[in-house]
Length: 344
Image (cartoon, rainbow, N blue to C red):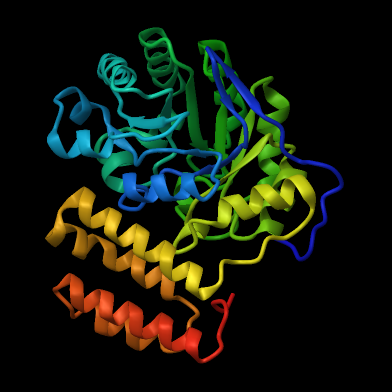
């Protein structure tokens, strides 16, 4: 990461994936389990995110048309990207067909999830970086199954002794994959250490595909540095969007113009939070929505005076009116006191 970076000219250009699918603004919201549900994706898109990707969906659950899985697979806006994970080529192909039939414009394949349940228990996600032959079979089957572009998200490798992302990217290109996203960590790192944006340059040099840089992009300066050091064609933003669904739009504006957009005012942030909150209640139902929204409300309040007390109180509440009253008390109290924006 670095301090101030002022781009000279636009660092962003549209990415044409073929088959009529163009990412006009390649600043992408990363798929994050339990976070990037439909309400979050819809909000991020409305605020200016170039592309949003669904939560990771297990191919076998998609094939069985599990009710919860189909809810995760709901899409809104264009283009839409749905991410699949699995270790069986036939199941991945069938899941991709179902997703495309349900309106997905892009199918993204997950070779990056480090979670033990997925990578060890199911031999999916980042485990597939250890078996390039199995990985190729999944890529080929998925590409053949659908008429929409298929993309790939992966890590640098399983560990630092097997940094095979450039090799796997070449395999992916030969299989018909149209874009590759690289998280600049190995599976064994999980989310520790620092993302290696310089290594992503090796993937970019290995293929003619568009490459997206991912990992530790928390600010507009991070995004500019990641692009310069990786030579990538765009960035994917994950945890930096917690409580800041406006961040991808700020990044896109900075990469195109060199000018920084200020954060929304506290009054604007409150309205964004409330829009998100009510969307979650509508999508999941009142009781599940109230519970699932707690982490998002907590993220929005980070850095505000009194936020620790606010979060502790909110987590004890079990009614929507009480939560809304608490939100009013925090934000309106700060606004009336002269505060305009949250602390960085």
